[in-house]
Image 1: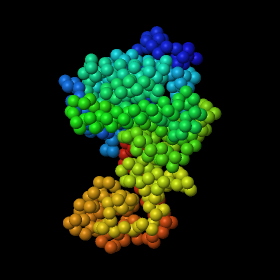
Image 2 (image 1 turned 180 degrees about the vertical axis):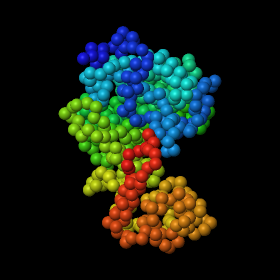
Image 3 (image 1 turned 180 degrees about the horizontal axis):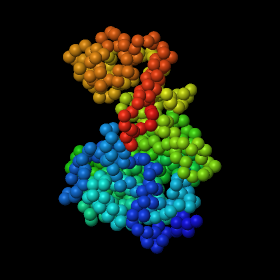
Image 4 (image 1 turned 135 degrees about the vertical axis):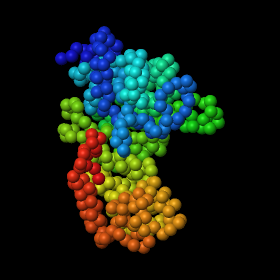
Length: 440
């Protein structure tokens, strides 16, 4: 058994942790950070906020993830400390867990970031922390880490900083002035679930800093148009994370919450994290496997909310509050609304084109431009990037229907499901490490 300091009950920078080699601290604290998925730099703009600095600030994006073409763009994703005074049921770092504990000093964090960046290991920093003493004390340590990095080390690259719920508004503003992106994790979709699994946290303590960040972002945008000297505030915006599957809320509830956050809090992204069973607790579900397919469907639904003009109650309703496991949300919606289809690709409005399965935002734009010059046929649609295997059941091209089936929900659904199965049943020559699990 570990001693009290090791269990998270002792001081964060005790002699027990200070004697650990820095690579052992990194091993412990990087592992402790892996369940937070809310890290991305999409939207960060190139600038010279830190003149004479170094580090990539281009809008190409930095994220702890695989890109669509298989490239890995990396952050140093780490906790300042995994000591925590809270006892959240789902968290590996909760105070009652008997795990190895460690803490970095702000100087160690900045030094690691600089050294890793110069060795081309990383492109930026994602820094979070367990709660030590209280939210303000923890937030001050996080801010100090980034201050050293920015002002003493001259690092101008990407920094994503976690906001601690309950921290003083002055500290939250200071964090936004230093970081490219900030995030406050909601974690659970309802106040009831939060009270059950996270008795030390409150809904207001989470939503208040999110609201402040939204206000500061709005002010920075308005004042930035008036004066180029107005300091940027979290130029890549704010994000949050929701844990999926630890509590009974439906996909409809989660999508409704996400839509509200996008509208009221100016969020760039809501990240969905399938619950991973790391603790034994009677309040948690007994299923051991993460709901990865459900997580994937929520991301697809989220995309439809943000870019395709859908509303939560269009995608789901009280009779079907969960997404279809067999089909993506847009195809499921189209099958429930077959009275709107097929649509003529040469005359349909842009908003209607976006509702067609297999037609994306970019391909819809291409259709609008191309049909000004000619009447589009099936061969033309393939060249424009339309996924005709799905779209053909819901469109006509120059008056011709290419679905080759009776337009009924049962018939088209069977065709789509069979196509999805056959797509992933073909032999693979090489399975790369970033390949996703089977998802339609």
